[in-house]
Image 1 (cartoon, rainbow, N blue to C red):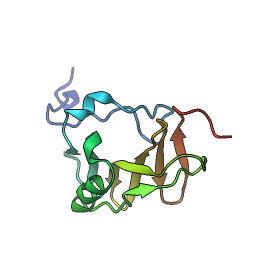
Image 2 (image 1 turned 60 degrees about the horizontal axis):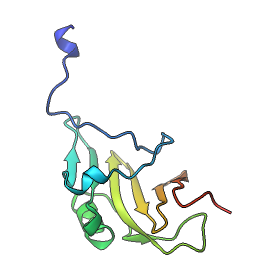
Image 3 (image 1 turned 90 degrees about the vertical axis):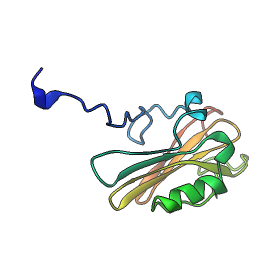
Length: 126
């Protein structure tokens, strides 16, 4: 391996749950994991909140990191589901995303200017 290919141990390992992937699984291991990670590359930030912090507490953590997300959002495709709670936010320069967890297990990602993408644990939309 060439020295320039060495992976720095301080780099953040990003889970495979970004808006571009089809896997939007909620990782139970994060309950005891870190609540905020910052990649050494610069302005890329991930704030992943613990379950007990979902909603307003998570909104405050995101705001402290410079990412603006409401504490709760209605499900974009299912009217019969309670308002989802903010569980994670990400920022890359001017672009940001807000991730919401719904009581039926769905997770939806909101990015300005991009169609909302949801992982349907609670069944597909009607």
